[in-house]
Amino acid sequence: MEVLKIKTKSNGKDTKDKIIELFFTEHLRPVDISKKLRVGMPYITKIIQKDSRYIEEKEIRKLANKEKNKIQKRMYAQNKRQKEKKEYQKLLVQINRDNEYLSTKKKESDLQFANWNRSAYEYDKDSSDLVLKNDINTGFNVAKRVSNIVNPNTIKSNKIYV
Image (cartoon, rainbow, N blue to C red; front, side, top):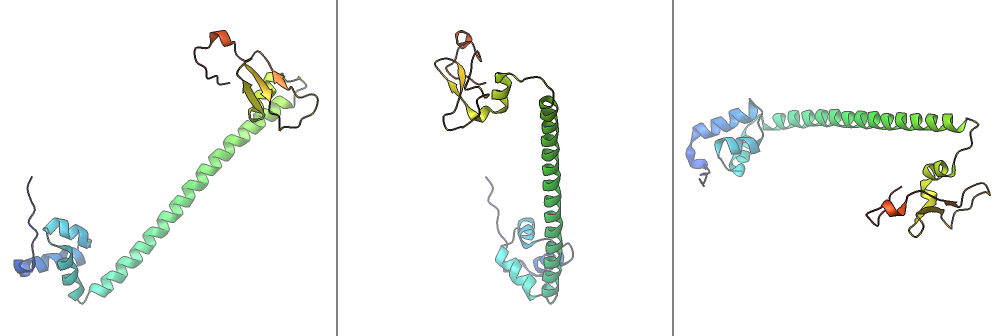
């Protein structure tokens, strides 16, 4: 592995001129100049701070970064709104689908009700039925137990997902 030799002050006027040129005309950051010229960061900072244009350049870069941050925030907010709008549209489609189904005069099966309200039911491992949770109060027409969900003989694993 090759060790990079870091240049120091003793390298002369050409290094100083190159640093000033890279910083003020090509608008490179001191980190990038350091990598490019293999010069230590403190030396680069010392040279650019001695130049009379340093304060003006610093203000220009500060304003440019502020503007860049504004654009980034605007893009982030715009992307977030678009994502939320897509999720909202998906939710509306699902609601409309459910409303359309529920508005028909057909009686829904207990299994369909259990699927729509899956968080209200627990899986009974002994009987492979869905059982209404104890802490949920419902009317008389809500099924307390939904049977024949899964045939236990066909299951290879102990975990059952409905």
